[in-house]
Length: 382
Image 1 (cartoon, helix red, strand yellow):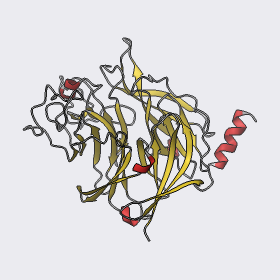
Image 2 (tube, helix red, strand yellow; image 1 turned 180 degrees about the horizontal axis):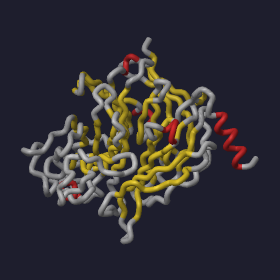
Image 3 (cartoon, one colour; image 1 turned 90 degrees about the vertical axis):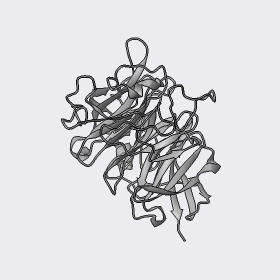
Image 4 (cartoon, rainbow, N blue to C red; image 1 turned 135 degrees about the vertical axis):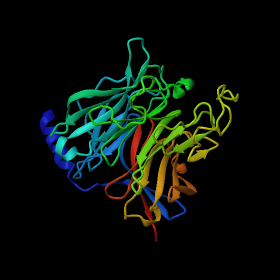
């Protein structure tokens, strides 16, 4: 079978209803009812992010080593899509987030974040976009629209989640490349949330536009390593979360021009058990306290608000993956306030890298491993 005929067959199969591999289904306890956990696909190499294609065509999944693949409705993992940029796959770097254009059905545009090497061997986060071909086999006309400058990472803290808001602005949640002080440097893009237009241009109403000493892309600053971001569907506000050092993982609701503290204000200490040298306490005047904080770090990654009528027990819940504690964290919300927390999937002993709500109302999570998996999670409310 030729590659083109294989892709045609693959695309046709993707129109089938989403199926789980029943043989791998497990039942796990939760406070709200019995969880059903099915393996949709395995054999993924350190998967990092997923995005649902419209009309039941399956899911785009990034692998940190540099491949973008489609998993179809039957759980079949397709070959690597061509046209993806070369990535710097060292340490925490590689091919990272993937999101679709808000107008994907018209423009077929896919956005990727990834680690990009500089001329001196260090790396930074880059964002690019290309059009997914009709046969689902290629990203066409890929071009870079944003680069984190300067490039300072030797393998750490790329952050890199992408979120479109209701007005079509693209938010990028960036890490500080493990260079703590840069989070407070407004002439650098480390440790920032930035806001750009879909083509990479800077919106005229960004908070620092017009200041010569500040990067105009910046929306908020004082962040560490942001590996989760999502738009609150009830308020339209961006939420992000970030790794603390040893302790102090936190959720924020970034506001324009505000300082979220790192490394001056933190609930964590160094991995050496010594204080962060720049830290002045958990609260510092003029800096915004975390919206929610974990004193012991779960190692959070991925974030999804549950806004689907399928499982009423999860209504107004926020789900967060955890790498270090190998769990899925369920946060119950009243308005913006976190009122309850539950840890799920601990029996699987799997690092949860990403979590999304599917169009069918199920949760889909990626496990971060050399032989990683895509899991589908539902709940029995009887």
